[in-house]
Length: 215
Image (cartoon, rainbow, N blue to C red; front, side, top):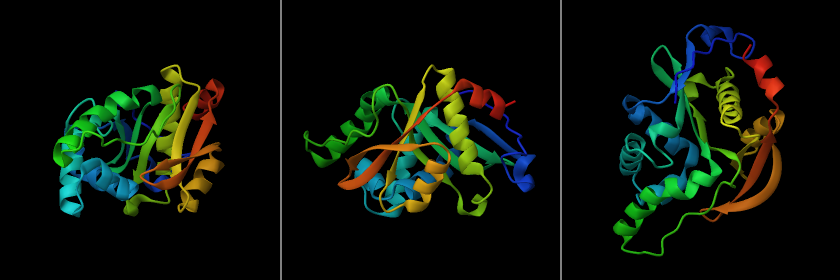
């Protein structure tokens, strides 16, 4: 994923506008990225790693991050960088790629549990560009970084020929759902992830909107 320098004072608080850039993740981001992924997905991190202790969960997430061709790989992650520090992360990939990206995770889980029937819930529909995870570090919240990450994901989706971006939001996270609705996402259905209900939300993209945003 190519680097993208973003300086947009209309959409990011001025205190960070000159220092902020959006870039593709690199392996050196692993420790902070694993922390933010864990914060964002909570119990799903336990499901994906087969671990229950925080240090073991984050160690395994870090390993997945550094590996290639899985859903948590650095290859699928963009980073909000402020003066070389990871302020936020976003995991994105095509919905139809999800089964392939989940295979390395499933192989590890099945080996660890000695259970070939272990499976992961389907999170993304084919034809959607899927926002798997988004998280901004506590210290940098409230400055528009999460919205900027979403806009960048939507722009990448358009560049790759997708007209729909989707994401899931837990029923017990009304603050996030309010943000997504405000930025144009609409509920399409309810799905179950790790035995919890999530609203599957979709935004239909228009090229002219993003040409104006990134002008």
